[in-house]
Image: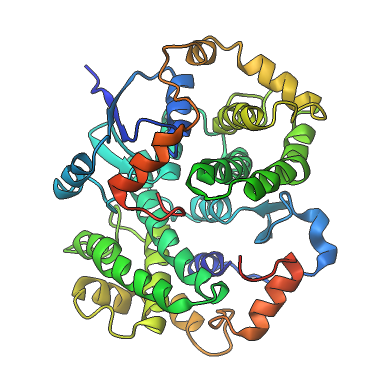
Length: 200
Length: 223
């Protein structure tokens, strides 16, 4: 859900949130969360939700070619963030963390570093879903690997520019809707609601 | 003259099969370059044509596209299979994502040491979580969204045929889905795709997992 919170924040859309309990199961199309109620619909599936919000708030490119670039960049970032999301659910996080760090440095970050040589935004000269996910992702990476951007100066500058955007700046302050990294309580909540046990 | 569409992937279904289905329904001709050896994959990486060093990769309209979902959306939009407005589009996307989740579970099977528990899980999720949704959506309508053929319909045909390969009677309690499938396979392009000799790939045999793993030295969750 965090990517959805980021995108709504950047689009400057007010949200209210409800924690999920077992009672709300019926509203869920595939019995899964995230669920976002918006414009009279109950949307599920993170990517469907992100694409809807991005298109509605003009963060999804001006034509199909821009759109596919945004989608390619976004999918890569979501793959990387998913690896990080899964870490608390594995019995031994160390090999996973090593894998994430090397994939980030060898496979993913070089792509964005190159894309940001010159341009201010990733695609089409304007802010898009891909830029939002890149900020979110780089901040998540730095939480695990503080110096990870040291060889990626374009990305570091990009991150610096993005966090000046007022809506993002506010989101990064204490008291905002941004969620902290997962702790024991969060894991327990997820496992209880979705009724699964570790190891996955 | 338009450039040919070229697909780069293993000679098997995997993540490319949905793209093959969509191009077929859109009546777009395509060529395929199969990764039979590690060297062929390494060449693509060294040539710098794989954005994240991953396949599927599709050459189309002068671009080299990666990421299955980005590719499917591009093709769907180009060939008017992606809804007439934002609300239709999000319905198509929700339905599509669910189907892709289910098909991914089936896709992983050849890479598991013991597929039985996973097969049971797929069958119960299909019966309890996914098929009821499509059964309800097709009570009345001919297509899933907006009264016209879309990406979601293409993926639903693909998925139900894949499910029936594993569980032949799985649609017996889902008559709307079964009728839908019957209508869809009458569409000439789909009908031809289901004949022998088409570009449709068979279910994975023993060598498929071996080749995929050798080529990429991948983990089972990552291809």
